[in-house]
Length: 492
Image 1 (cartoon, one colour):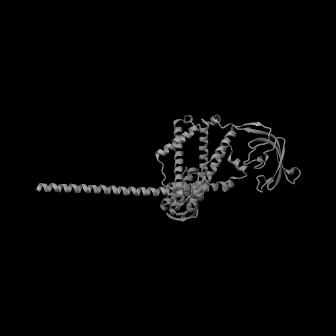
Image 2: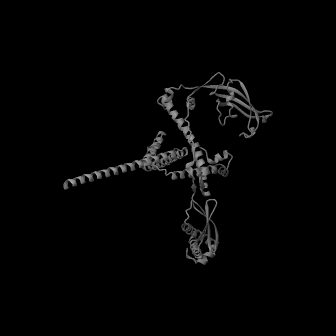
Image 3: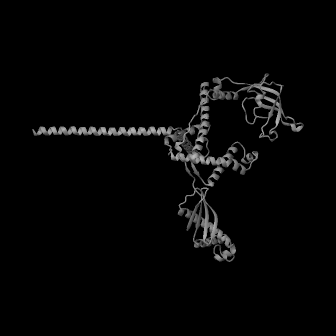
C-alpha cells in the first residue's frame, strides 16, 4: 500500500492510496459472488455461476462498483492507521483516480486545533454596578401596574392611561384613496413616554396624545424614514388625525404588606429584598454576558483557530435545530417562520445561522481550551451542592419526580441528566471565574502571593530544620563533655 498525503488550506488532508492490482481482482470476484447471490442466472444455483458468466449478465461496471465498496471498508481504516492520521470526522472518497493500478483519493477532515497565545497577559476591568433606587422603583411600578384597577375617567390623558381612539393617517399633498395610508377605529393604546417597538402607527405616537381629552381631535405630522418597514411609508410625510373616544385611568395598589402577600412574599420588606436580589442578579447576568463575550473576542484576536468545514456545517445544523425547537415551543413551525420573514432555508442558513454557528463554534473551542489549559476540575462536594440546587430549582417550578412515568428507571435517567447538567453548569462557572480573575489581574496577584507564601513557608521550614540541627548538635556536645568529665573522674 502506497500512501501520499497533501495538506489543504481548509484544515483537511488529501490522501491518495494505491493498492496492489491483486487486491482489486480479488475484490471484483467477491463483488461478483455477491451479485450472483442476490439475483438469478439461468442454469446456475444462486452464487454458483462462473465469474465470466456473472460479468456477461451484470456487466463489468457493476462488478467494479461493488469491488470499490468492498475495498473502501478495508483500505480506508488501514491507510489511516499506517499514515497515523486521526480524523476529526468521517472522510470521503473524492475519486477513483485509476483502476490499474487501483488508486483511491480521499478527503479527510482533521481534528479542530487551537492555540490561545499568551492569553494570561490580557487585561479587562470588571466594572459591574448594582442597580440603584431608580431600577427598584421601576420594577415596583411594573408590578403595581400588573395589579392595577382601571376605570373610565373624565380628565386629560396622562401617562399610564389606556385609551381607545380613531386614527386616520393621510400623506401630505396626496389626494383620493391613495392618500390614506393608515386607518383604525377604536384603536387601543397604552400611553407611555417610553419607546415601544411595534407601536402603531409609529414608535412614540402615544406620548403625543398626553393632555388630550375625550371627543378632542389631535393632529400630528410624521416624516417616515427611507427604510420604514411599510414600503408605502418610506420617506413619506403623513398627517395623523386622532379622535379620542375613551380614557381609562389606572389606580395603582398601595405598596404595603397586603400587596406583598399577593406576590408571594411575607411582608413588604421581604418583597423589596427579593426584588433587589432579582434585579441585581438579572443585571449582573446581562453584564457578565457582555463582559465574557468581549473577553473571549479579545482572546480570539491572538488565538489561532483551525477546523474543517464539516465542523462548521454541523454547528450550523445545531443552530437551525435550536431555532426550530424554540419556535415549536411557541407554537410556530420553522417553515411558517421562514415564510413570515419572506426567507428560505438557504437564505436563512447563509445569512443568519452560519454566522451564529461560526461565533458559537470558535467561542466554544476557546472556552474548552481555557478550561483544559487552566486545569479546571470539579470536586465531589461542589458537584453535590450544584446538583441539590438544581433539584430545588426544579421543585420550586412545580416539577415532581413522583409524577414521572416509567418508574425508577425513568427517574434514574432524569437524575443522571440533572447531574450532567449540574456538572456542565459548574464547569462553566468555574472557568468563567478563572477567566475573570485572569483578565482583572486578580489571578496573577493571587499566584504571586501564593508563591511568596510558599517561599516564606520554605524559609521557615529550613530555619526550623536548622534550629533543630543546632539544638541536636548542642545536645550532643553537652553529652560528650559530660562523658569526658566522667572519664576523668574515673581515672582519678
